[in-house]
Image (cartoon, rainbow, N blue to C red; front, side):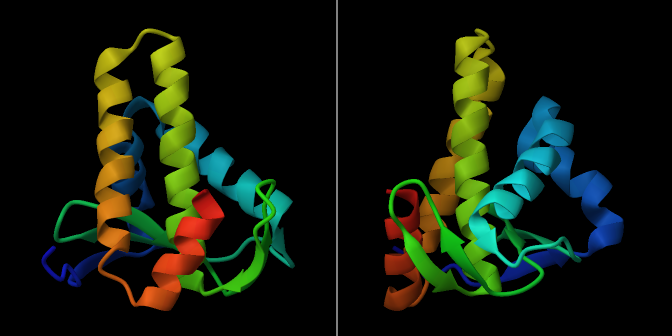
Length: 140
């Protein structure tokens, strides 16, 4: 796999463009999903300024406001960097909305969410081994 490292980073002012690009018709629900996920699973999360990223391969992700201890239902309970937290929550969100679209018979958005998930997961394989390991354990 090629080393895909060049991101285009969007600040808070660009959220209105990034979220519809990343999540299609689910963009407003996705924002709530991300913040609720972090509130429920990131120790000490109380909001903050997020960055939004699109990588060279088209992968979409976030950079969380800080590093956090993530405690997930799959027994993952470890500290993660801001970048890892953003990738993890994006993968969970893409998976969730892929299922929502499938259950409501919306094939086009289902395929978009599946593509976003797999593109970001592929990008994860270009990260340092320690980051890969944490992210894959978190989403397992």
